[in-house]
Image (cartoon, rainbow, N blue to C red; front, top):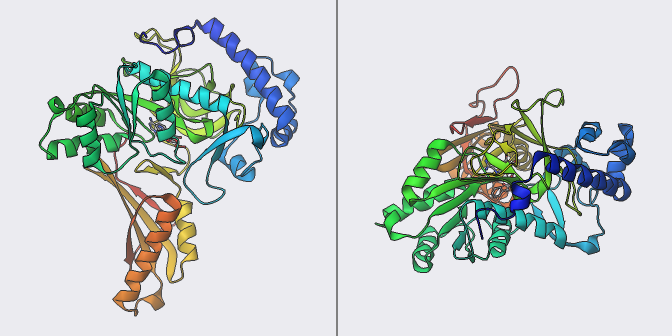
Length: 435
Ligand code: DLL
């Protein structure tokens, strides 16, 4: 096996790629028109039919799809295949409606895993490798996606999931793991723990890591590379478009190649929706042209980045995206989990004696996210015993954990102690420097 997983596609000429995308787009538009009443309605509202979309030059005619549409159509409204043909769901954290539930046929799983296999190959992976996957398994797409990609490449796959870091290191040493897949913050934590246990890069066989699902800086890349003695590659994706593997980094480490045979990328102005020329910074929009069960057209990711077609030294011709430079909505990614302030608000509103005055404070200490929620007590709670205040803290903490799957430190504070704002409330203080 060479340096590409699928050389024909990854190094395809622009002309051939456009032709392939155009054919697939036209077929995909017809597929959703025929099978998804929700799409048909959106298209009718915009006065466009499948006959109007013959190639990628017609893409702009299609309506955008947003998270709000996913919410409206939850859970089955965007399904384009009979449920009997679907074999899997994956999902993001969150309460009903905020949660994204994506459906896959076996064909969709194969394509997704193929995208992950490209990423692993680009990081130097072959069937000789031992690939330790420490992304979460379960509803989160990280574990299942990289696990499937690793199988395809033929690596010996260690389906570790996250947590129990000393055991991770023990397996890494005993089984000679050569590739590590996890969030960048967990990679840094594994690196620190390795050193705390008295080992260094010379005591492990790791050569590469494939890290994504959350923003990370070049400084963090260098730190992880130093701690673990590896080359660290970025990988990007989102549940809505299948999961990790929408784009991946090559050895040049200057952005992620988008798997354009499956996803057409556009950059738009987040305020006006206008399509921006190549090289502009704006919101990334994806159209999935090969997925059967949950094919999103012109899906607004809310991730802000830049696309580039500058020639890459790796030989791939797939367009590259920069690391996401921020979001055009208020979503935070804390410990790899997508968190909307409104999810926290909905928990507080259900808990009596807490007020909906709150502030989320996020920081990164030793490469690990910290997550604190300050909540104002109501006046009548002030006279309560410490015991009942502690109980309230525990209740909020438990509810947040069950919705988001991560723990927050809850601090109950005096009434009126959270600064009031004259405009939009400042709900989030993010002290991490991620870009
Ligand atoms: O995070 C899928 C994934 C798993 C990607 C494993 C890479 C590795 P979601 O939980 O739906 O899916 O979150 C998607 O995470 O819109 C970005 O804002 C952010 N994100 C994903 N990858 C990166 C990255 C998975 N490499 C959201 N750098 C996306 C920065 C990333 N942000």
